[in-house]
Image 1 (cartoon, rainbow, N blue to C red):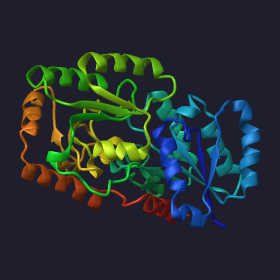
Image 2 (image 1 turned 60 degrees about the vertical axis):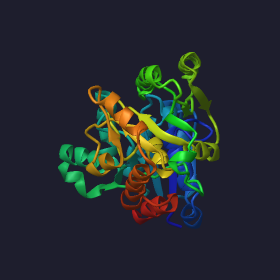
Image 3 (image 1 turned 90 degrees about the horizontal axis):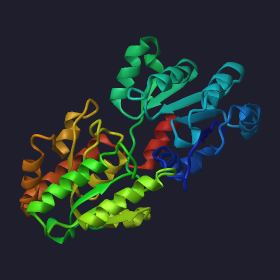
Image 4 (image 1 turned 180 degrees about the vertical axis):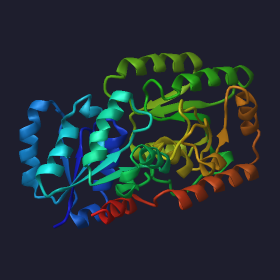
Length: 341
């Protein structure tokens, strides 16, 4: 069978967006039908090279699809060497999905060139990354593909209207630095001075090694009387999102097509205030309130004054974006991988 072996350094219960991505693909009906399989290891020291080569050869998979980066890999070069080895010395076809490239460090970008050189197919999750790589390596354009992500969080059965949503603002995402959480708290503290009745919540997962950081966020939330929910199930996440009016997601590099937390909020009818960056398409901007430090306070006030009708109209833009711009399911994403064979 011409199946795909998905290689990853993180996988549930590890808290990692890429690990969740692989898990959702492998749980799809297409994956089961086509016999997709998993190669997951916690240790990526170079000393495991021969052992992992032997194990991968014994799977009998015709294709290997390495997902990169993951927290589990750390700074190891073993993933890069595996791709080069199987491309040069075996008949296995290699696919590499690069979830980050343009914004990675020089060292990471330099090492990722091994993937671009030796991978038979390179997958990016948005058009910007594809164009960025294609400009660096124009002769590789033919082997570069885009497979967009969809949300891990399903839509609840009954999307609540504005009047039935309990929380005014939510931050949703991984609880770690450089995710905009500090900006969210500063903004909410300012809003609470003039609107002390607001109900605010932070919800997300705490990745390994960021427990101390999460403790500081918990303390700040208690001081501001902001509710916080950590590491809850996907079903609980969906229900809570369906109980929130607005999300403020101040991504430091702007909203993009690969922001799972953004897609989850849209999917459950939450109106979103967010930041714009070089990855932000016009279609993304149309779904949201784009903020910066100069217009932030005014936009937040405008959101709080939205009528039910205005709220429904903005919700519709979000649902239309998901319908037109995002894969409909993980089955569709698995099918797109299958089409690469």
